[in-house]
Image 1: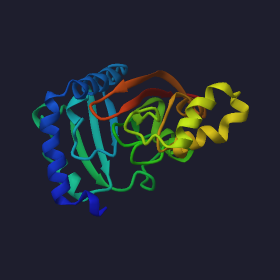
Image 2: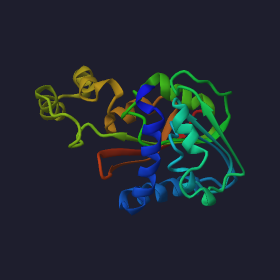
Image 3: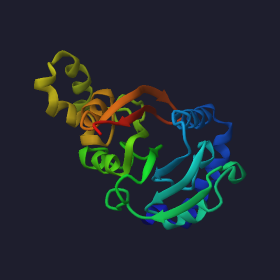
Length: 227
């Protein structure tokens, strides 16, 4: 985790302040609050890859909030997140751990959210989605963003351009391998990838494209199903 050392974490925290002038950042805050409003009771929440706690203040009606991150310097900054006076969680705890290996007890949370992490810095695959599902209570929600493979920020290799042109012409049964390469096995996430992955135990409530100042994203809210 040398990249996420103390100087990097400090600059990242300074970026939190700068983003207050960026419309897409406020849109993410509003979206997160709206996800919280889908619950009719105070909720227990996990921020998966919380960084400096950039989005803590967007949550509403929170009983307990857990921030998980693999970088200790980022968690140091998260002790004093932006708009700390507007973080309304009755209890906040910060946990140092890798989201692909750290474990929580089953049915610990009503909401697990992750912004700017999955299918961007961490592969969003069946194993990770199964872990999140295990941590959620019946009816709990998973809210997250991805980088869409059609984002201008994604390298337009010859193979990727070919996949973009070819995939719409092929039946799903014949294009699975090509599509997996198009999304780099979950390092990016488009609508098809998310529907396929979430079909195993989630009902998608909303799935849309969202443009930030950096990427074209997927933005999804899925409800734990089957219990």
